[in-house]
Image (cartoon, rainbow, N blue to C red; front, side, top):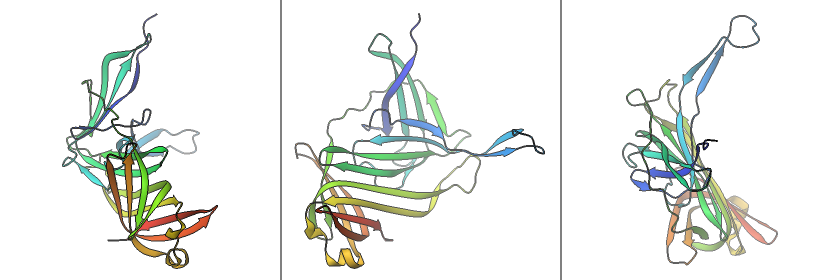
Amino acid sequence: MPDVTRYLDWSLKLGETEVPFVAGSLAAGNDKRTEELQSGRKLAPDLIQVTGKKPFIKATILDPSVLTAWTAIGSEPATVTATWRTYLQDGGLGAAYKSISMAKGVIMPVQLSGSPTKAATLDILALAAFTTGSALTFGTTSATGGAVTKAFYPTTITVGSAVGNIVSVQNSWNYQVQDDDQLEPAYYYYDKYAMSGQAVVKDLAQVTAARLEDGSAEAVTLLFTDANGATTVTVSLGNCKIHAEISGGDGTLSWSQLSA
């Protein structure tokens, strides 16, 4: 019986940089708009028409500092490329590759999460823009494949000038993406943006009267450290409205970013 061809997630490149990611998270597709048309009262449509294309690549990456804001593709990073590689029925890796690349578009963070015992992950989404009639380039070029050399764990949160240890943290970005109803979008933009998050902390000194009663406006910064404490990365979330509460002996800080 011939070997059945199978592919596994292999490589994600932002520009020329290989970015380590969570296995099984690499995906490509098209979040397209469609319209169903039919004559009279038929039980099924006569025509399903694509009225808007929105090709994407998405992944969950293992460096929380790689992406913290809406970023144009075509400037920096120059491209986004996802690659899959075959693996063999009798074990080992194959020599065939499948790659999908976008040369223009936007890339944005979606959700960041982690704890001191669970490595931080960051979900990202890239939308491809159409340039010369095609938004994506399909190929069979080999790729090196990213390597995980460090994992980062959330350690502290700084709110204003107060620093507290983190039990867990999550942060979400929500961009209301617009493409002016283009069939093949040549550009994207957003007309509304929201960023919010929450951290559980042990130090109840973080739960102040201003944060619990009224909600204070303060800068929020997250610090992530590798397991050996040798390397740190900082994620600055800007000026946020902070709310605090106590439950089960822990403090919970919730925030929403304010307009700059």
